[in-house]
Amino acid sequence: MAEQVEWLSEDEMKAWLAFFAAAALVDRKLDQQLKDEAGLTHVQYEVLSRLSDAPDRELRMTELADTLFTTQSGTTYQISQLEKAGYVRRRECRGGPRGVWAVLTDAGYDVLKQAAPGHVRAVRNLLIDVLTPDERAAVASGLGRVRDRILAAQGPCAGSSSG
Amino acid sequence: MAEQVEWLSEDEMKAWLAFFAAAALVDRKLDQQLKDEAGLTHVQYEVLSRLSDAPDRELRMTELADTLFTTQSGTTYQISQLEKAGYVRRRECRGGPRGVWAVLTDAGYDVLKQAAPGHVRAVRNLLIDVLTPDERAAVASGLGRVRDRILAAQGPCAGSSSG
DNA sequence: ACGCCTGATTTCAAATTTGAACAACCCATC
DNA sequence: GATGGGTTGTTCAAATTTGAAATCAGGCGT
Image (cartoon, rainbow over all chains, first blue to last red; front, side):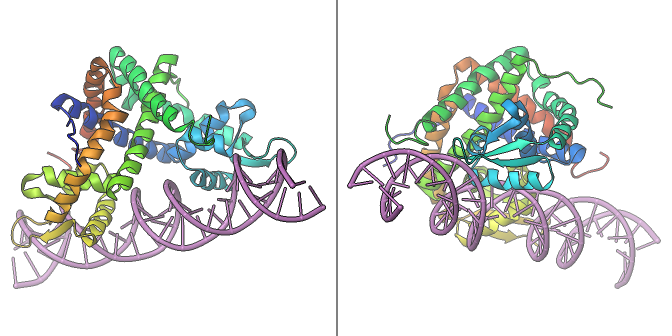
């Protein structure tokens, strides 16, 4: 076993460590900022944000889970929380294509609109404005490819077994 | 209020979304891979890894928490788990400089050594080898700066009030 | 119409994370 | 030699996340 692994070079290690640390720290900071200023967790903000971007401000549970890169049961939990808070409503569609839609309420939209400026400012301060234009472009293309490859590797598999 | 926020341009948004998604997906994938192949969570792997890199393979709880970018109570919990598994041992140093050291055991070192190749391979497949050399350099420098700025903003505050 | 299969969603228990409160210990000072 | 402050680590309850099992609706073959 242990068929000869190519360990990371010093430069590669630097990239990996920077990526890993930045991911953890930025997420933590955004969470803090949102809790302090808007009373939302980062996850909840993302839920509201995806919904507000979706057509008719609604998304099936599974779609939502996919765009959040999280599990379905986690999504169920968060939607339940947001429903209690009145920011989201569940709509069951018995007639047409099966499924449950999470719908952003007006209250949810208002909270999002109120939280957005601070959030965007934080994203700028923590990440975007810290990068040079070149670095930003490299992050967009490189990490975009990283994301797409992972999604491509699991997307086709999750749902259908053959073609 | 809402004093004019500068929203993200399309390119900036691309960078932010790529970063956010890649961070979530890579972490999730590494977790899966480690659980499947080594029976460790990513967090646990990181703990063992930091310890094995430290002088004498031991670290104070607070140092450990810092390098893991997590809370102290979270670190206490994980060390307790790893102690149960026999991968880590606690050493209290009553005489000298106060504190508790988490020490990597031989068993812990073995598990780490066994898990490392698969983990490094995964880091390569998911991230490092997907980036071009330029992108990798940009990630290292740019996200390194992101990390350092966040740490600098909170490091000095957390621990001492003046200088 | 019946029974099985698939897909979507929820439920449930277990594991983990978090933040606040607590306890232990050092040092400096009185 | 006792006291207060600051640091370090743990404990506790609450919130969240996870994965597996249960639920429920619809389609299909018989």
